[in-house]
Amino acid sequence: MSISSEIDVHEELSGASIGPFHKLLGILITLITLFDGYDTFNPAYVIHYVVQPWGLAPSQAGFLVSSGLVGFLFGAIGHGSVADRFGRRGTLLAGLWIVNVFTLLTAMLASDFWSYCALRFVTGVGLGVLLPLGTTFINELAPKRVSNTFSLWGVTLGWSLGGVAAGLVGVFLTPQHGWQILYYVGALSIPLTFVAHAILPESPRFLAARSRVPELRALLARLRPERAAVYQTATFASVDCTLPQSTIGALLSPRYRRVSLTIWITAFLSLFAIFGLTGWIPTVMLKRGETFAASFGFGALMQAMSFIGGLTLAMLADRNFALTPRYLATWWMSGGIAVLALVFVSGHGVNLAIVAVAGFCIIGAQHVLNNFTAGSYETCFRASGVGMELGIGRVGAILGPYVIGLLQQVTGGPDAVFWAIGGASIVGALAIGSLGLAAANRLPSADVAPAEG
Image (cartoon, rainbow, N blue to C red; front, side, top):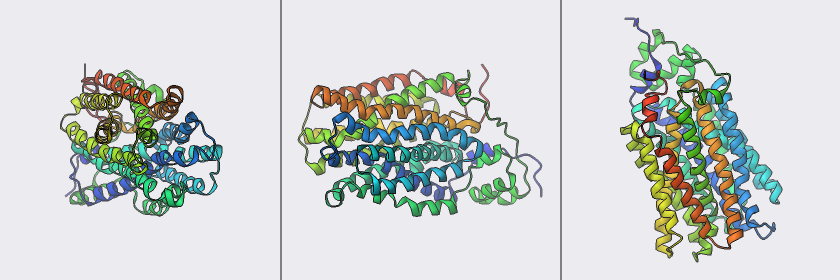
């Protein structure tokens, strides 16, 4: 029996249950973002080994972390228009290959400050594709009612595990094999890339927007096999997806302006705090009297707690989208106050507890902000929206390690670090909290026309 009514792909995906193919793609994106998180955070474990041999000042040591983030900035902002025009799949695979090749070259060829920074810059261009596009892909794949939670399992789990893995390799392998082992381990992403070539499909919403109907039918049949017979003869509702001449202009149009500007400011402050803290936490904790193994372990602790914090926040956000900005504000405010407490208290137990809270709140909230951003824009320029958020955020990430290093150089101690990171988190909380209910009122659904009034 033929079905005469057109199928709305947005509704079709929103109403789906999480099936085997959803889970398979979630695992694949998890593994991809694992290597993204691993590559993003491993420079923190290089600093200890190269400061003296390369004769680096603290501000230069901070730039070892920032150099990859500069590349990330270009990759995150530049990839969006490519992915929105030519597709998510090919752009993501290209980013993976850039990371693969230049991670291996870093292990083999980086011999001084400038060669390391140059190789990390190009690696960062590839990393700038993986996290935002992984977030975009998951957001366009997952049922709307669980999009935040599914994104946490499909993107953030991998990114957090990657940060934990970087800490474990830093603690247990670098003393015997040198800092280069971090990048030889990172090159294990190469076999994963071949798996991604074989498994990863194009985004279903992108296929719908480009009227690639045969591919869309086949993909929907895998996502919702119980309706495969319907898709064989179905027609699909047309999607108005005209690429804007100016991505910035679209993101700053009246419908999106307030949400976009607020997200950009918040991402800048959040990532300033995150990368300032994660880039320097091993070195700062050594100065506070922690052992080498404990100091390096703090980074792994933060990443592990960030997943728990992000998952908790994601489940709250899925219950009530309208309250997401307020939940985010609560997380960042709590994390900022905890970090400020390190100015006044010390001790191993205190250090552990506050670093755990910082990971739970500050990094955990950033994961949900990424998905909130993806859900705030239409398919036509969703990748561009996420790319701009993480690109502008990476300006803060670039400045974080450098400014933190400079503050230590000027003050001679770690207290200024905690003032800067705690202050940035609190201001970020105030920024996103000011958004209030505006997102829900203006953007009832990213792929549905805005409410009147």
